[in-house]
Image (cartoon, rainbow, N blue to C red; front, side, top):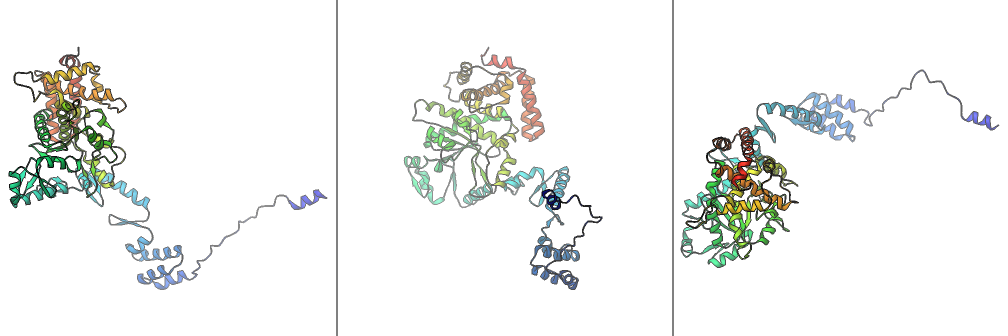
Length: 496
C-alpha cells in the first residue's frame, strides 16, 4: 500500500510541452499614457506637463524621451533623463561621456593643451591656473596675494610712506618721528626696542628684516635678526656661483630663538612650519615642505628654510650662524625650483594630504645638490668671520675633520641617491655634509679641471634657461664627471 501511495504522490517524468508559455507584459497603470502622448502631438509644453504628472518614474522617462524625439537639445528633458551636457553635445551615460573626455584629452595633449575645468589651456599654464594665480601687467604669472601686496606698497609709496628694511614696514609721513627716535610699530603701538623684542618673540608676531636678497623672519632679538641677514647675504654670491641664476624675489627664511620654539614650529601640537618627513630632527635647520595657509583662497605655500639660534644656550649658541645660512640656502633654491604642479593640485583639493613625495619628485635640481649647496654655505665656504691674517678656510677644515671622524665619505652614487632616513639620524646628518663636500670640490677643489667646469657650466646654463630636459641631462653629466673624480674628492678633503 505504501509503495502504491508513494507511486501516486510522485509521478514519473512528464513530457515537455511542444511550446513554451507566452507571457504578456502588463500595461502601465496609466493605461492611456500612449494615447496621451499621441494626443499631445508635437506640443512640448503639454508633454512636459504630462511627464510631471506621472506617478511612476518609468512613465515619466517615456514622456521625456518623446520630448527629445521632438527637440533633441531640450535641456530640461535631457537632465530629467540623467543625460550629461559637454562640449555642445548631450551624452546619455557617464560611461559615454568619460570615453569622449578621455579621447578628447589625448587629442588635446598632442596639441600641447590640458584641461582646466571646462576649458583647454597650454600645459605649461595648467599649474598656475590650479594655484589660482593670474597674470600681471607684464604677462607674468603671479599669486593674487603677491599682486595685492605690490599694489598696497605702490599706494603707500604714492601716499608718502617710506620703506624701513629694519622691520620690513612702511612708515607713514605722520609717524616719521617714531622712526627717528628708533621706536618700532607693534600692532597699534610704537614701542622702544626692549618692548618690541618682547612683542616679536612669538612666531605669529615675529620680526621681519629685509636685506637686498633675503627676508629674515625671526623671534630672536632684533640685533640677532640683523646679524642673520648679514650672514645670509654673505652666502648669496656662493649660491649664485653654484646655480648660475637668482630667485625672482627675496628669499624668506626663519630663525627661531630657541630649540623649544624650533621643535614646536616643526612638529608641536599646532605646528606652524611642519615638515613631512621629520627631518628637522637631523640638523639645526630644515625645509618646511608642509607650510600652507588655507585661510584665504587661493592657498598660500610658505615653504622655507627654518633654523634656530639659541643665544642663551652656551652649547648651542655658536651654531646659530651656520644653521641660518643652511636655512637661507634652502629658501634660495626653492625660489629657483618650485613645485608648481604639486602646489596647484593641493590648492584644487584644499588639503595637503599625507605625503609630499610628489612635491620633491617634481624638483629639477637633485636633492643632493640642493642640500649640498646648503651645507656648502653653512660650513665649506670661506669663513665670513675670519679675522684678518687668519685662514679663511678654517671652517672648511673643521668640516673635513668632522666627516673623517664620523666615518668618511661614502660611495658617490650613494651621495647622489641621497637616501635620507629618519631612523638613521647619524648617517643621514652626515649625508648632508658629504653632499656639501662634493659641492666644495666642484667649486674650489679643481680650479684647472676644464671638463668638470664645462659640466657645471652646462648645468647652470640649463637651469637659467628653464629647460627641464636639458637640466636632467646636465645633472646626469655632472654626476658622472664627479663620480670619475672620486679619488680626487677624497684627497681634497684629506680622507685618504
